[in-house]
Amino acid sequence: MKIINTANYEEMSRAVADLILEEVRSNPKTVLGLATGSTPLGAYSLLANAYKSGAADFSGVVSVNLDEYCGLAPDNHQSYRYFMDKNLFSHINIDRANTHVPDGTALNPEAEAERYEKLIESLGGIDLQLLGLGHNGHVAFIEPGDEFPAKTRHVYLDEQTIKANSRFFERHEDIPESAISIGIKAIMGAEKIILAVSGNDKANILKKSLYGAITPQVPASVLQLHNNLTIITDCLG
Ligand code: GLP
Image (cartoon, rainbow, N blue to C red):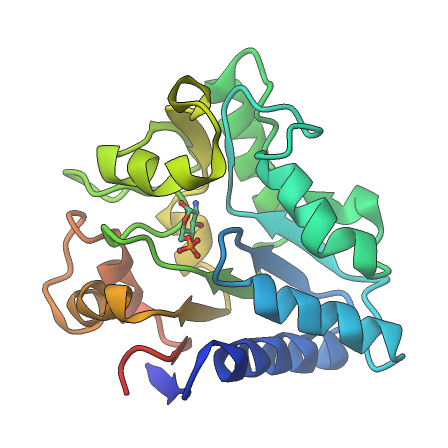
């Protein structure tokens, strides 16, 4: 693994955006695995600037997002589809038809998970996967558990995750309790992975993920086994 320590969030975002831009330039048809959350926001805004200034072309890029809340429609402001449209896709020239997010409104989330897994396979897997890190060590919505889930599936969210996400919802009863999340197979199958982590409150879980035991109790620990993992962080310095 390669660790890039940055002084602050801005530098971290710059480093993340630069690696994504490098990937898109070297492979204009790249399949990008994208994440939501506050961590990638700075990088997304830099990607938008790169497009606006003519320094990047996303017309051939395909994207697959990690996850989506169950029960939230694309126009719900808390849905991950809405987040991606608002914070990235509407600012760059990616073809919206080539942007994929699981369908949170699917009546049968298990069937939707299966469709999504097959979709990723049909794209030939992910070239560059961007990941954030949850406070409990989750990546995507792969929560601590007894085993690493191989495939995309319908998952129930951990108490700690529901609590962390409550900041985005006005009423507690509106916070979704489940989601569709991709599994370890698609993530670990990515050619390259960037793990972006910001804030002192994540230093402990990041150290545990990178240097602790590889265990499904700390889902991100599985990343230790990937042969092209770059960690970009402002919390290890
Ligand atoms: C959510 C997402 C993850 C994300 C994590 C951290 O639960 N499903 O993909 O990495 O939270 O979010 P943040 O970057 O806001 O700390």
